Amino acid sequence: MFLPNRCAKAGANLLLQVQTIRPKADINLSCATKGSGMRFLMIEDSEDLAQSVAERLRLDGHAVDRAGSLAEAEDCLSAAPYDLILLDLSLPDGDGRGFLTRQRRARRDVPIIVMTARAAVSDRVDVLDLGADDYLTKPFDFAELEARCRAVLRRRGGASETVQRFAGFTFNPLTAQLVVAGEARELRNRELRLLEILLAAPERIFSKAQLCDRLFSYAESVSDNAIEVYIARLRKKLEGSGARIDTVRGIGYRLSAQ
Image (tube, rainbow, N blue to C red; front, side):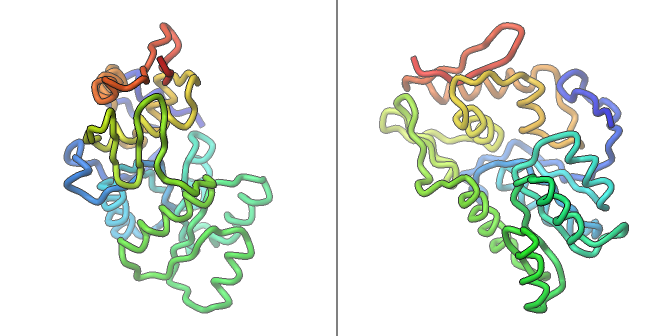
């Protein structure tokens, strides 16, 4: 399945129909629930629940794609990488346990949290044995969902220490705090996610298309210069540290130490 480059043309017609909640603004995380922005795939056929969950996760700085069936979920996974999957079990075209089994047999290690109304202990044991990273019974509290997402991502990343240090600055993705020369600097949600991506692989060159795929969901129209805008903002936030974001002409961007 072909998906258009969302950085190439704003408002392009998307072939993959996924539903997401568009943020009203580039929310300042100091005024919202703070967290580390990731790209999530939510496999849920209840539109109301999907919208509510996506809206809350977007406040945390995450990009969220929604698949209403297993077939749509497979299309999403073939088109883009995801940091976390939220999986319902009862779906129009099959049982989520089959999807979970296929992912693990294919050695795909994307963390999966099952969200379901099935509350029996045997159901929880079953999906955990099949390879789920966590299990959440509906109805659930949004704060608990966010906490479980953070815990699963920390475990999968092997992170025993949350704070990251690089070239004269420290960064805590859970509190959205960047400190340069003892000065705390606020990061907005896209800036936060962009720094996480670059900091996860210093000296690696990321193309605009790769950054778009990690920063935006498919339902969002992205202008040609969107990545340039966020790169410029992040460069200003890093001023005074020993870090720089290089532009590799014709290829992309990389985080380096001066």
